[in-house]
Each structure stands twice: as C-alpha cells, then as structure tokens.
View 1 (spheres, helix red, strand yellow):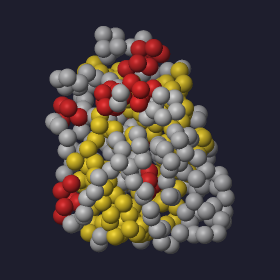
View 2 (cartoon, one colour; view 1 turned 120 degrees about the horizontal axis):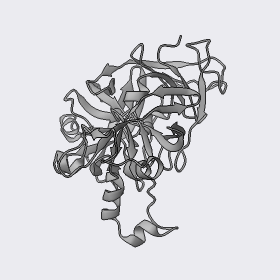
View 3 (spheres, helix red, strand yellow; view 1 turned 90 degrees about the horizontal axis):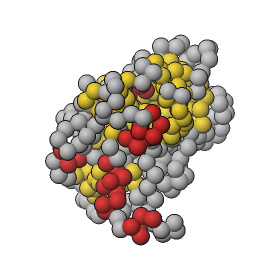
View 4 (cartoon, helix red, strand yellow; view 1 turned 60 degrees about the vertical axis):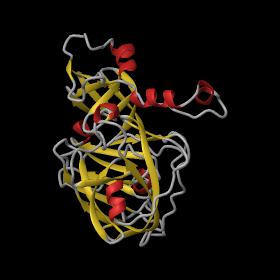
Length: 335
C-alpha cells in the first residue's frame, strides 16, 4: 500500500542491536525471514512486538511501520496524536502513534520504537482498494525500518534477507554468476527527511515513466492522466476490461500492455490497472489552494506516474541497497 507523508509525523528513534560497524567486502547477513505469501500475491514476514509474534505485510511503498488499533489495544500501547497528514491508495488515513519497547525481526531488535496506529475510516467504497484483506496480517513493515538495512527479496526461496549496509559498494549479487541489472533509485526528499520510497525510471511500451516500487500493491498500476497523455488509453479504448478494484464511485480499468523494461530486463505482456488519483484528490480536498501551491511553505505532493506491484516484482530477484541508492535485479529463477 502506498502511503505518502505530508508533514513530519513523529521522530522514529531506533537502536539497532548487532549491526556490523566496520565496512567489509563480505555481506553481513543480519536476519533471514520466511515470507508468508498471500492470495493476492503480496507477502508478510514475522515481526515481534513487545515479546509477542505477529505477521506484518512488507510495504516498500509505505513510510511508517504501523499496526492496527485492535493490536495496539491488545498490547496495551498508549496512543498519542500524530502531527501531520498521511495519505494512502484510498485517500487520507487516520493514524495515531505509540511507543513499543521492542520490535524484533528474527534476532535484530529495535528498542523504544515509535509505531503508527492505523484506524478504520469510512467504508471500503470510501477508501478505494483495501490495504489488507487477510485477518492474519496486523501491520505494515515500512521503509522507516527497511531502509536501515540492505533488503534482499528472494521470491523463489520465499525469503526476505536483511543485510548490514557496511560492505563494498556494488558487491552484493551473490546468488548468480550471470548478468544482472543495476539501477539507481531516488528518494523524494532525502532518505528519512521525506519519502523513503524506491523511485526509479522504467519503460512501458516505449515511454519512460516515473515509477515507485511497491510490495504493498498486489498489481502494477498507472495513473489515469499519464495513461491518457502517453498512451491515449481510457476506459473506452480497445482491449480495456474492468479492473477488480473498480466499484461504485471508484472507476478503474485494466489493460494488457506489450512490455515493461527496467535495466535491460523485460516483462512481456504485463497487466496494468489504470487508476484514478485518489491520494491527490484527497490531498486537494484537505488543503486550501494556498497551502497546496505556495512554493516555499506549501505542502508538497508529487504522486508517481506508475506503481510497480507484486504481479511484476514476484517475477524478479531483488537486492535493495538503500545506502547505495541502488537496486540489483535478476529474473527470479536465475542462479
């Protein structure tokens, strides 16, 4: 699920236990987590909060690691207000914040960690596509935690591996002797000062699109505006079918494109959902024209044109080097 922070919500301090301190050319594996694959193609990993184990959806398109209100209450967490607005795929998200004594990923522990608490807001129709429809999943593991590590997503082995960032640059592709793609990634306003989303350029049917890699999205989707401007595609175009995300009051449709390329790797015939700009619309409704458009003091909002979701990502083996600002990619079955 894509979450966009508009103002600073909290200072998320963390103590990382067991991290390597000296840079070495050897990769330092810190944790290896089993993926639980969900019916919609996304995946979750085990997370321990204050000694109790849960399943959290891995969401590279999020900002703050979060849990739901029911879990927060079961843990006895004292919730406080969040100063600022957060927006998801369905619009504005209601959140509070709380402190947990311990958040553990296998043997890696983050102490005195501030976690966001998401609250239900409106109906499913109000909020667009559901962020999570699996009752086993009680939270999102987001880039405020993920970006502390290098993150390997090995979908063939169903493993998410966390590595120390102290290693020689570029010396990370250990699983194959074959070729691989190496792509630069961008952060919107600095790694933790703004959005730690993984932004990169991809080519969809010959056009370069500003893309966010989002493991929290089951599918790949393109905003309606670039779909019309770049591809002359709308709901009346040949080959367009209804999107499974479409419902009353929420118009979305699906089209099969010819090819999607990144760094020399190509996915043929990707199914792309064409989506309305729900986040942008919710932001504009919540902010006055001056607060939106003032070049100095206005709240910044720059939605990506394309969201690269799990229907494509699951076909790849990925190594995300947050500190290097690079991503390394091979086909999922390349060894």
